[in-house]
Length: 261
Ligand code: 48F
Image (cartoon, rainbow, N blue to C red; front, side, top):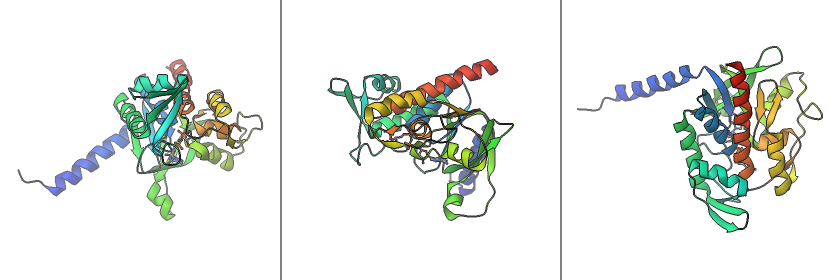
C-alpha cells in the first residue's frame, strides 16, 4: 500500500485535537515538566484523576538532564531513593545515605511512567496566565511557546481545572503571574512571594517538603517553586526533595479531590 501524506497529516491533527479536547477540563493542571511536576502528575494519574501537564520546552525534564554542571548524574538521599524505586529507576550507593542515578535514565523514566499512569503531557505550551473565580484559581491560560518567543499578538486558550500546580522551578512563574496581575494575599508569611535564597542543601531539602502546599485557593507549589515562593534555599543537584515534593503535592491534592467527589 502506498503511503498517503494526507492521511499521515490527518492522523496527527485528529489525534492531537482529540487529546486536547479531552483535556479542556481536568482535575489537575500541572505547569512544568521537571522532576517535581512529573512525579506529582504520576501519583495523581495513578490514583485515577485526570491530569494534564504543560511544558514550555520541546523536551520534558527541566533541570534534571544535566545533573550537576552537565555531569549527567544525580544524587539522592535515603528518603529520595524510595521514589526512584517506585519508578524502577536504578541507583547505586555512593556513601552511607547518598545514592547516585544516571540523570538520563531518571528523567526519561519519570516522564514515561507519568504518561503510562495516564497523565497527558503537552510540550511546547506555556502557561501565560490563570483563570480566577471569586478568589480561587480555576484553570490555566495557555499559548504556544513559539507565540511567546516571537512575541506575537495572539490570544490564548484556556483549560479549566479543580487544582493548578506550579512546578515551574526557580522562576515560580505561575505564582508570580497571580501576584503580579491581582491584588491577592498568598499564604506566605509576607503574603507575597518571598524569593529563593542561596544554596544550602540540607536546609533546602527539608524546606522543600515543608513548603509543598497550597499557596492560594486552588494553587499548589511543588519542587523549587515551593522554596522560591516561601523564601527558602536552593539545593543544587540533589534531587530527593524534588521527587518527594511531587509526591507530597499529589497526596495533598488527592485528599482535597476526594472531599469533592
Ligand atoms: O526547573 P525544573 O526542573 O523544576 P523542579 O521540578 O526541579 C528543579 C531541579 O531541576 C533543579 C534543582 C533541584 O535540584 O534545583 O533546578 O522544581 O522544571 C521546571 C519546568 O517548568 C517549565 C520549564 O521549562 C521547566 O522544564 N516551565 C517554567 N515556566 C513555565 C514552564 C510556564 N510558564 N509554562 C510551561 N512550562
